[in-house]
Image 1: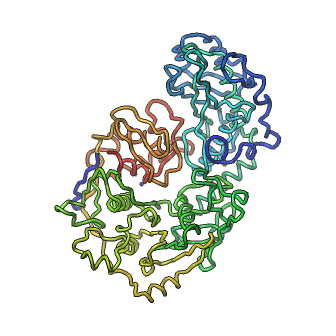
Image 2: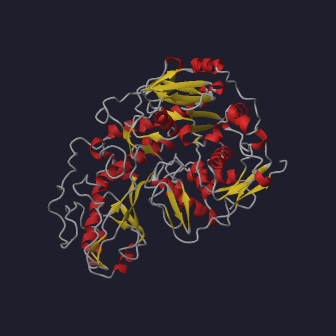
Image 3: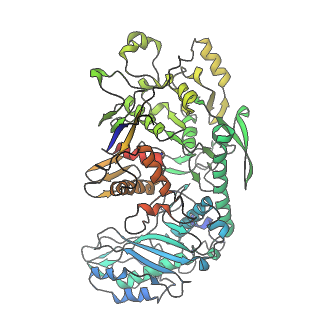
Length: 639
């Protein structure tokens, strides 16, 4: 589905694995979840349905309709679709049922709750002043609503019922895409000058295949109770909201300054880089490890950034060029690199890495044995393969470590990457370096690989592509480095001069410059082969089930939310169904830029959701904006 074409002359809070607990960002005095009391009292549905507190919202026309459906056949739920339901006594709120599941075992139904902005009363300075403030507002509201649904009103409305045999109660859960540590554009909350809208799913409850209408009515009431405590400006902690929005705005401003200052990355003094664990992205605390070290810049690398709200930020500025991060094992090299590579995203206030920012076009690359590669020009690194195999349009269903790493780099450059992050531990050794004894044993004319050490300098000198590398096993890169940082017990020191002295004493020199080969070929995305032959799903961050194949994204390390994988999945289907982006001759890079701008809502007013362009019939509640690099990475791995 991707071909080469000659161009011719002419890119812990509860339940979500992240964020902060709900009581930290709600109004003082509501930390017990308001009225209702958690596990006692509650529903009168009987049997194996959960014991829940009765909602405060009752008697709306929607709830009365649901109660009348009690014990009806399950397909009668389809009557909920169509015109929106006015929720009387709820500030002009409306509920839309966009998709209604066909039976209790099917994927849950999609619904939206819409409030007029005249009722929600969020200030225009938050909702419509700028795109970044709007994104931060929606992110904050998603956190509050999610936590309210998970118990903030006295009842956990996200718990489904299962078991009890065929005739037992089923479903009944409400689900909202819950943010983690990152503040990203998502489709689950929309805020604009006219309304605020929450998009979520609901497992419509049943006993066997008979409707549990009274239970459904209580769940809708519980949803409206949660909305009342989360989507009205008067109901939330306004100071916390402001702090959240201004922090995100400052992060965006810090990142935007890097290029003009000649920097590729910045790490603020006092940042907390370690995470609680490999599966928990919350910041480590001294309770987790009493030896926790806050980041402090070497004096020689300190710079000052100025942001609109927080003022001056002092920390380590990494200049464009080639930066090495060295040090012993377990001293924080990879921890620093991992923080840097996620500097493309804004974080929730209190994450510890809020002001660890990097070039927004930076890409983490690595080797990836076994990946599919399609029509990729890897001749800058791999050439003269046996049997005259062409590497200017290299295709394989089982790439080696070196060919996969070459492809990952070239695909990133194709999309406009201006910085590369590389960790020696995840690289193919023969791709990175060849020492003198190996060169003597295997002559250069017999070796098809041009090692990265010979290309890293021309990448910057010729293409202005910076590289930040973790290196622990070879000093051969010392002569080509502009900056060398040593990590010792998580403390950073500038050892650039010492590294250069050592390199000189060992006779290490900058390898002869090798200009990157130019190519007149561009890749063109074809619609043939993009459409899935069967069902699609993205149930995890790292793999998309796409018809009869899988798109493996485990080593696309800058994906951070499942919603991004879901958006990528629907993007690919949208590309397959639309001729707007693919015409048989448009370059792959142009197609990616077009769809990415559409997803970002280019040309739309602040608060108009760009992600809706990939929703087929109704607005999706699941999407999180991916970068063009990760979208292209998925397409490049589609077999």
